[in-house]
Image (cartoon, rainbow, N blue to C red; front, side):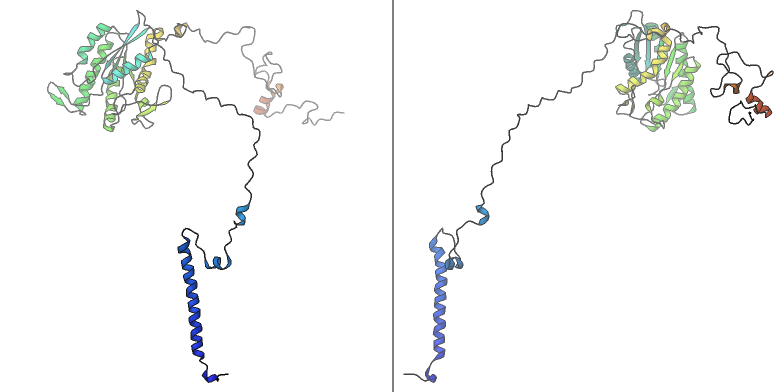
Length: 398
């Protein structure tokens, strides 16, 4: 029995279809959510895995065979490297000072703290000279100003009588930049009266040494780190030079050895071997060991000139080097006395031009009797005839 179309409920059927599809989807979702909860530690699966199955094959790139092991080549066993030899420098052995002779001559060094360093340097310089003994008598804070503290004009005569030196070296003045006491009062440093009195005292000390016929070597002051102290040292050196030279002694100027090209103080400089070294102390006044040796270097030659062969060093063979034993270096006389004393020069290219044809031959005629072709050309404008066959000979030869 066919129902009429107006009796068919299309809307209800569609509603039932939608409910059925919704139930199916809900069951599928519930199934998907329930599987991983019940699987426990199993791997979570996706919807595609459930519908089409999951491939468990390893990827293609992981199925490649492992690389072959490296081929072991037969290598020669290497010899163990020899340990590098130690390059420790050889110890420098200083020459032991030689024993001084009983009749060795003494050099007396007097002065302040700088003189003490000079004495140390001279002892090192003449350590190998058996004929020289260095004796130092110093008072570090002394000078020519504070004679109430130490009076060199009173103390020096007793030293000369005791030591009996062959030469006296004086180095004073580093402590004298202060007021000076006179019978009528004090004089300020730098005044005219101060310099006049200082000149008299230094001259009296120099005359005391020269009066005993003892050679005097008065050493000048070096520059100092303080610019004002260096400027005062220049003024004092002028007075000390004048006093030493007027008494007949020698003034030893050491300024350039401890200054730069501009004449200013330097802490480091060249030592006696030309190598850079520290010459002065940290206070800018004292001397280092290299500075003491360099200061003594300025006294070596004057002392050797005064003492002669006694200041010569001892060689390794135990011989003294004395200049008086050296042979003369004069020009030897010619062996053949028959040679002419004066020989005219002869040109190599044209001997006849100079008026002579033979080396060491007879002397040419004097200028009054005959002139050379060159003299005729220069003085009279006359040209000598060209020899036959030369390029400038224009004469016709049949």
